[in-house]
Length: 308
Image (cartoon, rainbow, N blue to C red; front, side):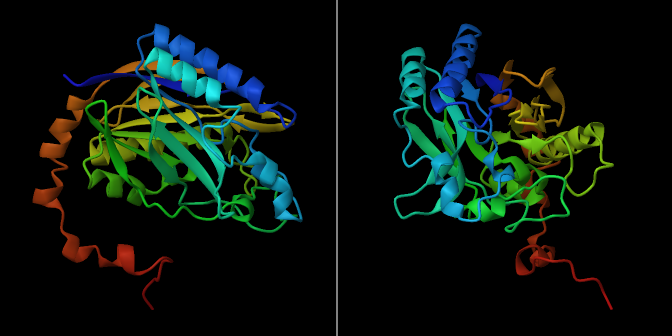
């Protein structure tokens, strides 16, 4: 049995005024709780060091650069890396990355149990819009502040398992899981910040939004015979609510752990990577059953083209 005890470290709201040091202190508390529960891997949310700043419009986008991290680790996050190394707990976290070349990405990293960064992913499927939209109930300006990720969907071997990452809106796109599935992925880690209210459809309630969040992750897990750990940042950030709904999904697409709050909350589950084997060798044995000669449209066009 290849068991990894995983902690899904949901985080409650982070206000604009909250300093990174205060946020990291909360992350350290979740890390300590996870270590006591026997976890050797902790997954934190998307943009977990700051408020969800893409809701705020800056005419000069450079005014948003203070939300970005120019290095990782840095002075604010060093205590997390140091303590994780002491405890022997690996972690994955999301943050806004500013590269030395001045590029901006929505990024997630993975460390090993010695707190060395062994993997990096940059969000590919950016939702939202670029300019101020007066018809929305709130702004969602990820396309203004980030560029699409340029690293693809890589996977890494760690703790005797094949691990991959994606971020928030990526979880809704089946191609994300399949590209990692074709690399034998056994654990997909993803963080998200999802508004409780759809800015373009006020009638879409929280129940439906949580269902759609579950649906993408459960389908991705089942169709690729992989564990999926989805971790939210949730709660009311300066009057803007984010939904929770953090879950751990097994390779059969079944939710085995679920958050019950919109606060800092740790989910713990012992995930046996060998549970991936049955699906990968039967109904989703890609080598036997995939028919790539019929899949050309997937990589030859973006928008749908109905027949005349």
